[in-house]
Length: 96
Length: 99
Length: 209
Image (cartoon, rainbow over all chains, first blue to last red; front, top):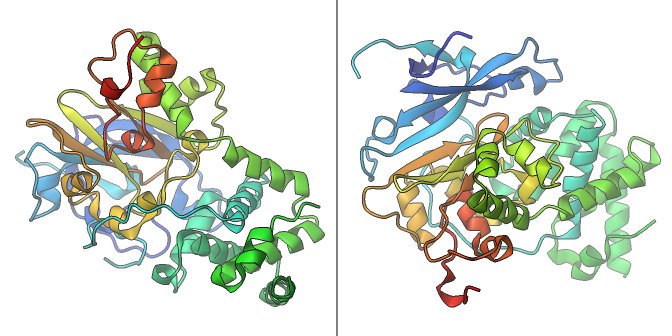
């Protein structure tokens, strides 16, 4: 797998058609890899009766709520996790 | 947000905390999908994709979406035809009306 | 063949048109031999056997047994299996722990994924568009609607179940529960506390042994 816990990543802002499990509200957002959940067949292909193989790494990715929503009404320490497939992530360098 | 189902972050009203009694037909919707899945005849991902593709997504209840999507998937796979489902459903409703 | 359709028949036209459609689908699939009656019945029984009481048992055991708690947090399916809950279906069950610093909230914005294999059917509110839309963006406002406000200084962490894992919260053990046995502790664990919109009941109205 490409990413390690702690890596800063950006969710690809891709508008690819078909069944995807990356929610729109996370596209283009920057967060960190919390952990590797495991490797699973790709749901985007399973959805059309394909095998979904080879299996893809699935990561638990964390985001600060204040990075996700301009109007977030809670403390800056609140955050959100989503489970994102590796092929939806790219490395993001830059200041924290 | 592009698609109807992809609603995280969309505006919404208060959460309705009411609970309806699960009806037998809804239990059956769960069971049919569970059975089809257990036999490898459809996957969770195929069902989700089918649900997401429903034009009527926002107008249907949770289990109505499941039934509509199950039907769509079975027809797509050539297991059943829309016509025979229509016919049988109409017969069933006529039978219920007579009771 | 058992006829499940009495309810729909007696409720007549007030029920959904999809009721007849799923009955039609069932009848056709059985006639064509795609499914058989025992398979359908087994699946009905499977769901009926699952309920929030299972989640409450897991939590109560974790509260009294540190080794079990460790297992629950590292491998939810194995922990559930150990208590005889037979959770074959989801790829993973991930249990997240509430602490004095962190309060967890579970949602599935894309569809309503829920640890059904342990807890059974999710409540209607969990599946609602309002919850799915707002839980990620304003979790504290949503929890307030359920009557819960985390104490000052507690972070709220939302988990959107977007993929193959299903999530459940391990709430904190309420204070003043010393000496309660597992069964009594399990009674405090509500379904809402397993999703994270609230916390377990306090034992103030129950008399401890």
